[in-house]
Image (cartoon, rainbow, N blue to C red):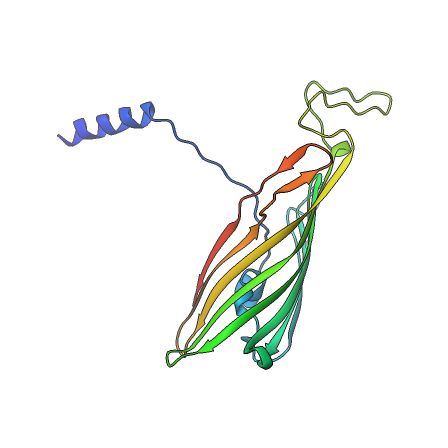
Length: 209
């Protein structure tokens, strides 16, 4: 009976079409020490001015390897019962590069169980793509001419700017902390050059300790 069930399960799996998709999210080490980087609701939880600089490189020695640079600053703002902060980051990966500058505010409510914070971060995001670093099987690259023979790829350098929104909730108690957040939401997408539409999906984070 178990054998028949397994055979039917395999047959069903082979007959079923699955659709999967993914994208490269921003990478940096020691994320547990820099929770504001992925959750704006953590702003002010250090109870004083907090500033950090992060730099991460991966696959060092390979041309176009991923590199991430980030600066975070946040502090309590008791007049508004919360905290203010800003984030500046730059990331390069192959022919792609991205730079963003964002400001944040989070409201902190002090309950009997602990601190409950809700925050939002908004700013501007610039995405660039250097088409001169790309190569296609049918492209022409002789005599200094770059022609990918692909209408979906630029032959030169293109870039675009878009607003970006992020938000999160964070709880800090005496014995437990947790938070959930969303980063990289682009309500209008990003248009690179004249006609390349870039629509990245937001990233969701869950943290607990």
